[in-house]
Image 1 (cartoon, rainbow, N blue to C red):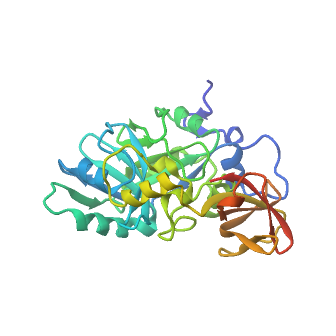
Image 2 (cartoon, rainbow, N blue to C red):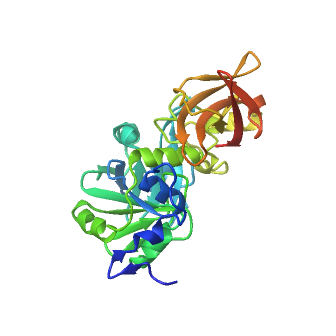
Length: 333
């Protein structure tokens, strides 16, 4: 493949859609959908877990398989309370001598305190490395080209990672598109940003719009302590064959009895007016769904929402109503 870099200077046209934008779409939004853009995710929490018992502890505290991970691998996990409610989530990466938790800024302190309460006689040390490290994400259909053109090896499996000198490139994204996150020391951040200076930067608003368009929920907005695992639809966070962990009894009970009454779905709503979180949608006169988040989608020309839909109505194609506007379930999250 021909490089899209010339002496580390990026050909920006190669990373933006070939079709001219209509309606003055934001460059970062267009790049996330049709090319590649970078996001500064340094505000996210990063916890380093060391000690001989680190894998055993996190295996017992999360919903996914941790003890079988090898260096270079990773997974997505939920942390639950004893009632099976979701306390937080994290991307978990396995290194030779530590495990790294990459989590939402809202849960950085919460998860650290939660884990610390369960470290009793374990050989486990938690270190918050958020302020001493940085995270730059490159996302969009052509994200891999950006990294390859910079000389970085691109991991092929979700949540896997490769070293890039002193940096780590992990295959993980925040918008539901193709993407990679580069973890690095905070002192190296300026150098990396100089390398990707030709790549459009996406704003938080750009990323949120694309994320909701793609049906990707985020803890702190669509996923909170209010919900059970199966209600979120994010079963990539769960290994049903692993041993005991905090909250497992509830997860297994819900799985075996299929006892959920709502599930997170993506909706398309024929309006340009963005409804607030908590807005109810109806079928006939009955409440059928509750919006968790919504955005106006420039590409769709209508509102896209993530909503918790009552199970009898969650099949794709089901029509609902929002103040007279037609809404349609497009897919389960």
